[in-house]
Image (tube, rainbow, N blue to C red; front, top):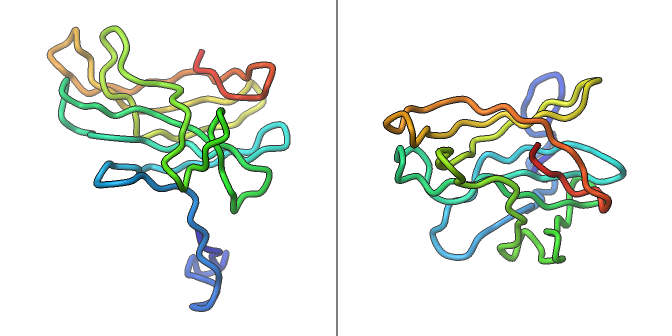
Length: 144
């Protein structure tokens, strides 16, 4: 994460701090970061593993949280996202295969998770998923 100039969209300064928010060991994918603020925490959502392989996709959506936007982010058990941590909130289930590439929307009706997936019941057709997020008693997101 780096700070951008709101007028130009470019980096504030070549000497500005770069914040590492998440990493995975080896060559395993971690992409599509999205951050929202809820109940005193910043939540970093990422997509893990193999995208765009139809019903062979292994994509899944994970999350970690921090009190500050620049981290450190930790998963539910407390593992740092920079050390490979991440709590899965949505993965392959039923005919939904490889959900990921998420975006988040916050509006007056609540928080919404938008993502793509492959439909295992429809020959692996790519589809758009839209789910409400609810929050458990510990303020961790739950896909509704």
